[in-house]
Length: 321
Image 1 (cartoon, rainbow, N blue to C red):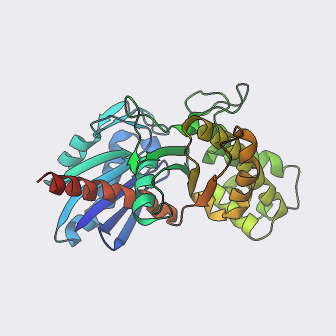
Image 2: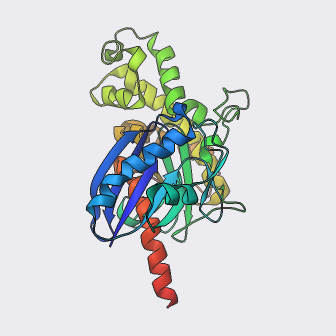
Image 3: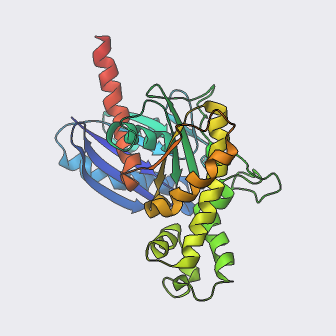
C-alpha cells in the first residue's frame, strides 16, 4: 500500500511517497514561500505532490502535517503560525479541488504527525507513552498516551512551544512572553546566537557561513566540528528546553521525551544539557526513569507520520468490518 505524506513547514514543503511496510520510497521538496500568501502556498503543495500522483499506480490517500491547531475532524487548519493571512482553512476540501483526484486526505498538526512517524518507524517504536518535541521554524509538541495522540478538548493539546519559562521574557510569534519558542524557534535561536557570537569573534561561524546566514543547522554543524562558541549556544538551548520539559513531565507524568527536527541532529551536544538540568525541574518521586532520546528519522518523521494517517484509517476500517 502506498500513501503520500506531506510536511508543511514554514520554510519548505516536503513530500514523500511512502509504503506502509517499507517506509519512505521517494521524496520531493519545494520552498514554502509563505510570505507570498495562502494561494501561493497551496500551489506549492500541489507542486510537491504531483510527481508522485503521476508515478505511483495505487495511492490510497494523502496525509499532511501542518503547523498550528487542527480541528477535531482533522480537515481544517486554524490560524497557522508563520503563515500570515490564513485564518481558518478547510485544507482537505481545498486540496481535493486542486489535485483533482478522488483521494482521502487527512490533516494533522505537524508535531503530531512527527510523533506518529516516530511511533511507527522511528525512535519511539518501543514506547507506548512519550512526548514529541520538534525543533524547526518553531517548536512543536505532541503528547502520545497508550499509542494514541492526546488532542485535548478542541484538538489543540501539545502546544509545548508556547509554554512560558519566563513571564518577563521575549514574546514568541503568538505574543506569549518567555515561551520556549521565543528562545529555540529558528528565527529566535539565530538571533540569540548572533548576540552571543558578538562576544566570541574567534568562532568559525563568523566566516562560515557568516552571521547574516546563520541557521540552527549551521550552529549545530559548527558545534559538531568542535567550535566552542557553537557548543555553548547548544548548551544554552538545551538548558532552556530541559526547563520546559520538566514542567511537562510534572503535569503529565509521561517520562519519555523524543526530540527531533533540524538542530536535534547535533545529538548529545543538545541532549546532554537537557538531561543534566531536567531533573532539577521535576518534583522528587517523578525524576526516576526519565528518558530523553533523539529522533532517528531526522526530517523524514513528519512525512512518514503524515502518510501513517492514511494507513491508520485503513487499519481502523478493516477492524470494523
